[in-house]
Image 1 (cartoon, rainbow, N blue to C red):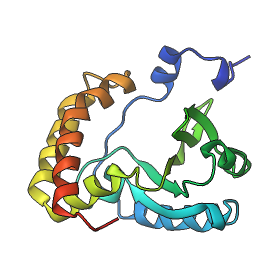
Image 2: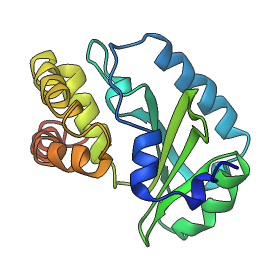
Image 3: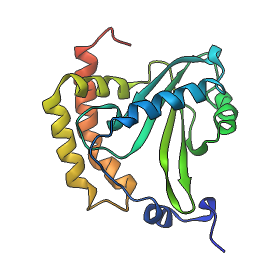
Length: 188
């Protein structure tokens, strides 16, 4: 009998779900739009400020994990945990929660990745550096390619260690997110 995902160690999960990078796929934008339509059936509109496609799959012409990252910003007057039930009802699994953020995924199975994989990030309105970073890379193809090169250099060494892969990108992401916030002071 196979283990359930919830019974697996982090190391077992990293083996089953390695870092995979692929060339940009124009279908990713369509997958986001389809998932957005789906999510709007479950998420209470009165709680939501914005829903956006973020992450490398939202940036044309760079290699990315074939995962659609979605940022949901909720109004500050709601407890972040109050949206959890709606996201779970939409078929997502809770990955992480704290007082200010929730992370969910969909498309992870005991056999490995589904064809379509989604990560849903729930933050309070204004906690959206991901949007600034995305926009900066969209507007600066040279920096997007620099980010792509960094990710490609980390791929194989950290293929089975998602935390290390993410941590090694942190300084780059923070640096260009800070630049973007200054470049786009009134954007969000």
